Image 1: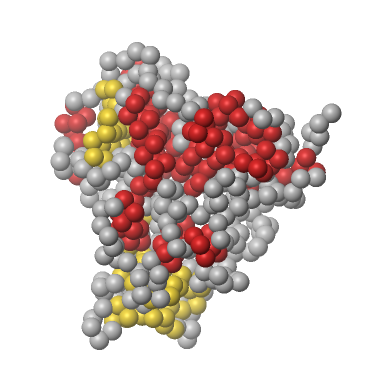
Image 2: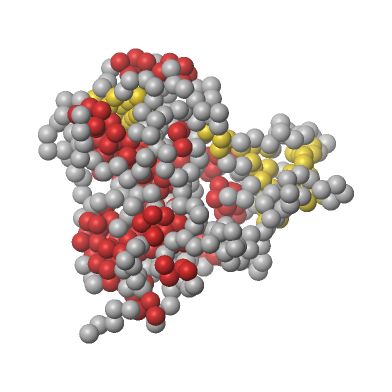
Amino acid sequence: MADRMPFLSTPREERARRDARERVGDWREVYRPGALLPVVGGQAARCMDCGLPFCHSACPLGNLVPEWNRLVADGDWQAAAARLLATNNFPEFTGRLCPAPCESACVLAIDGAAVTIKNVELAIADRAWERGWDRPQPPERPSGRRVAVVGSGPAGLAAAQQLTRAGHATTVYERADRPGGLLRYGIPPFRLEKHRLDRRLDQMRAEGTLFRCGVCVGRDVPADELRAGCDALVVAVGATAGRDLPVPGRTLPGVHPAIGYLTWANRVDEGDCAVSPLSAEGRHVVIVGGGDTAADCLGTALRQRAASVTQLDINPRPPARRAGGQPWPVHPKVYRETTSHEECGAAAAGPRVFAAATVGFEAGPDGRLAAVRFAEAEPADRSPRAGTERAVPAELALLALGFAGPEPDQPLTAQLGLGTRPEGTFARDDSFATGVDGVFVAGDAGRGQSLIVWAVAEGRATAAAVDRYLRGGTELPAPIRASARTLTL
């Protein structure tokens, strides 16, 4: 009999990355091509097929992790792809970009190394594309209903694909020149090569979804007129209002929001221009922030051959292991080194300075940014500790402080009569419906800044709510309600 308990004997093995010195010289994805398949079957076999799999609860999509792990371990990749695609429209995105809270909730993670769920997911997704298993699914018959989706990030795309497949004539409106939202212009190509996004968009077009880019709803097309011309409208504009840093020198030339910096880098990759006007080449760079966007700025600056890069994180350095207040199965705040930090070549924290409160930006003789001042952050309230200030040279400072919610002054808010919550997100009920008949809100615009898996789950659930509104019932899956939150104890 084959060994059915390899989790006792097979160690966890991660997907192999290309050498850091090699990958900072290009913009291709950081992982070694083809390195996943030789190990993924054995890694999938480590899944215990738990009687109560907490990985389901940790993932808002409800991915059927034990099922497709067992199918991969048994070599039935096509069946595994069918199970994966049953709950996730875009596994090739989540398998690359999600921080994998499912792995934190893996039962093996109670006292050992979790199953490499994210790697198995990605291997299934990529093989499904290679073998032609992830085909377009045009509807069998049209419903005669028209739906408009405003925004083409992961929530908008997931909602649009589900609604199109249900038979509704769906058009996606995007104010940028290309669809994809932050997948297009916020995520660097070394984390997501854009041909993968284009491939999925081509599939959606083949199914019947229409895209209208370069159209700002509320400005180019009045939002109330758009609503009047369709049977339902989904607002999925994201949470693009960046958090600012109101300290002296904030308006100096050389201080920029991180998203603008990443957008220009992606435009260079798209061929729109030869060199970014915000290029870090030859400059001393300071990144203010400690999250994924900050790490993306770091990897981008290294590839642009910055003279130096310093990252200021106001939070203290996390512990190496779960703290007592963050027990399994929650996704813990522990010290993690991203591929960008690995590329710095340092042995410890790389360019990061923890517990660093930024107190101001200093100008040089030419009136441009010359230095960033920071101090040690007090543990209690993260305020600057007196007498600890110091400066680091900077010719480019990038603010990667996260996002507060939808842009508050966008005209579609007033034109549709949308309500807002105190935190700045659009008000909606538990079924994603606003107080305006036929208008729904999906993704970060209603939830606030969150993970890509939550955006895709919201898009799928919103599509089910819209379908129910249009038909009186629905067969579309609704993995979450609008009030759902991450797994906590």
